[in-house]
Length: 164
Image (cartoon, rainbow, N blue to C red; front, top):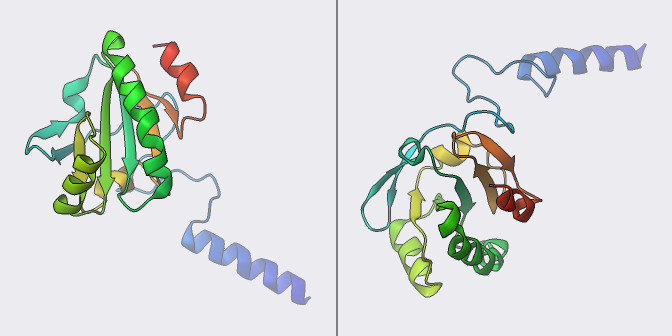
């Protein structure tokens, strides 16, 4: 009897709060990020003052790298991302390093210290990270030339890059 009540309460609360039950996203909530889905468009300010809009890069593959200045794993990834950026010229690969919930001054100092050669963008309010459902950093998202997501959290990034 008690187990039945607990089960009913669980079902009730799960339906109220929308636990992962496979339901469609609610109206107004961001679309689920998935492989082969179109990448959500965004526009962010770069450290050099330029506005960068993802949609303007259509026709080129893009690697989005979400990170923070305080993340040790993000710092560990820098040499690898620099290498990918250096080799991406022949494939016209764009690398966009997006710093989440960070101040411009802190990111500028960090980018200078690590001599980041690719565009560094500021997602000061975390809206783009939220749009891409970033739950931890670094998060890598590879987009194909048509703006579709090829991989999310890209465990096989090197293989995916070779296929571009």
